[in-house]
Length: 209
Image (cartoon, rainbow, N blue to C red; front, side):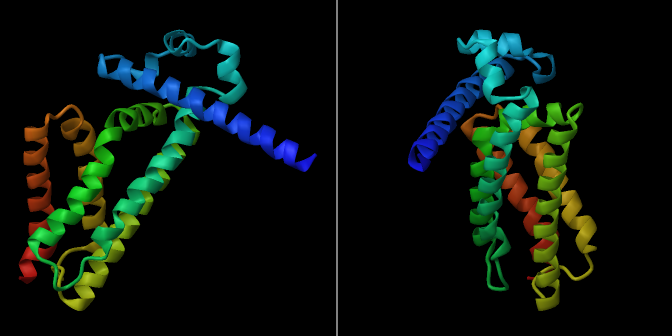
């Protein structure tokens, strides 16, 4: 009986994941066509996905619920990509910093459209807003810890206020991903990446070199 229950749960999870991906594909397409996530109705989403409303509500409470499960997964992926940056030490060159930041940005880049939808939803959905706030707080905490460790060891500019610098760099990057990286072609993306690397390098590390 237990094995049957586990099999049924696994099957339901697979169906939910499949439904979620179909719906998220629709969200991405519509947003890329200029639609606003705030204005998209469940009716529109299920129609575009070839799905019934009843099926949607079997798996999701609302549009916010659709985004929350995805957001939890992608933020874990992005947080993991940042570990290479946090691991940079005194002997890191500008090229090392560039490689670490490129990994973070390239991990984020495929998800900029759905991230934008999540931020739209956060304006009116408290549960989505809580996830966004937790993600940003975690990003700032990681960078703040990195800055303080570098200042203590002498390879990050010691005059910088760690908490405020981490907050500025984190929010600057987040908005830049949405407003600049989203929709950029490959050549523009490379220039944007170079600019981001220059800002981080000159702010944190260059003064001690």
